[in-house]
Length: 164
Image (cartoon, rainbow, N blue to C red):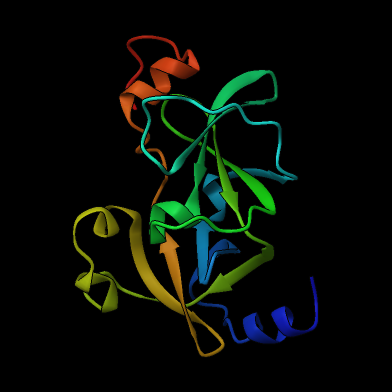
């Protein structure tokens, strides 16, 4: 990290949300820091048949199976370069978010839900909590990515009866 990314993200003020900022294809995204467990290089991932296209498969995080969600595919519908995995907390266990470069932890300013994020519908509304900026580019503050389909958790071997 450094240089252009520090310049792009340095405009954040003391007000806002502390978040992990990363790229997902052409998009700048952020996850609230309190949902992030750790970041890592991509781990071996095994494909999982019968899951949505944005589920890359399963990996092992700290000894436990975890679904891998391709954030670029989830948000844009196309594949992006996977550079990092970001482990996040979810209701039934951790999820590995496959992302582009992680730009760092920043305090970001975002518009409240009645601002630009109110224009999103469907899946986008469920995923995007607010919209901010990175320099002159939009930044999407994502809601918890715990909305992994039930069949993915079942295939991952998550304990039965635990709510997603």
